[in-house]
Image (cartoon, rainbow, N blue to C red):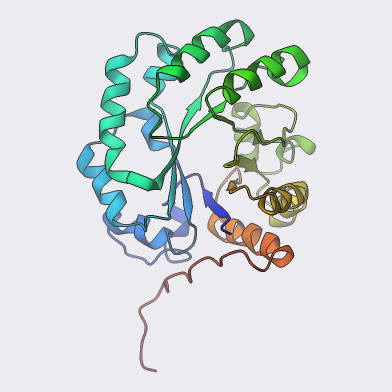
Amino acid sequence: MRLHVGCAMWTHTSWQGRFLPHPLPPGERLRSYATWCNAVEGNTTFYATPARSTVESWARQTAPTFRFVAKLPKSITHERRLSGIDEDLRSFLEAIEPLGPRAHALWIQLPGSFGPTDLGTLAGFLRRLPRSYGYAVEVRHRAFFEDERSERLLEKVLSGVDAEWIPFDTTALFRSPPTSDAERDAWTKKPRLPRRSSALTAHPIVRYLGRDATAHTIEGWQRWIGTVTEWLREGRSPTVFIHTPDNADAPMLARRFHDEVRARLPEIEPLPEPVPTEPLTLF
């Protein structure tokens, strides 16, 4: 029984010397991060398809059980809105092939303007995808959260190809006014949608955004502790990504989330021991 947890990235300036050794070459940072967490969001692929050699480096730095949830490029999801994308999609799939089993799911994040009238396009796109990968869709149009018919239609489209619906839970962020520059910036950029906590597949994925204050982040994820525990008891294999507006303590918080679930289910496989941030000495 394994719970995967991770962050929105595997390197961050504030982590150096705290969670990751410093100095550390860029080509070794993922390897070090993978001793803190056993999953990561592949946000970089949203902005550009990486070189195959870069992806080969990611594979070398991680175990086969490590999970990448790689986001499809914005040229596919946002610019062309899933239409006329065969060449871009082929290039992306060829680039990420070296990840092998580490490519837990391909993440299709859709713009807020992609609504119920676009579900035919989504259904056709999902049916054409190779079945060698799992797929997870994140929607941001309010109708999918507030209109029961739209919600059911989306669930039908996803269930038809065994694709998951990724919730991005920002309710903790918007519970009270921002208290830091990072929180104020997040208030202007992050979606403000109702919490969704239903799983469609055996591999649910959750994105949770807390606050810069650790106590508020932990308080806000308590419902997810219960939900994820139940998923595990049902035989599901969930992946949870922990965000905060500044992400300064995200690796520590991801491990804390894992610890809280493991306190309820001790049989969950533990996370690896983080590498020391300072060289080991004899004295």
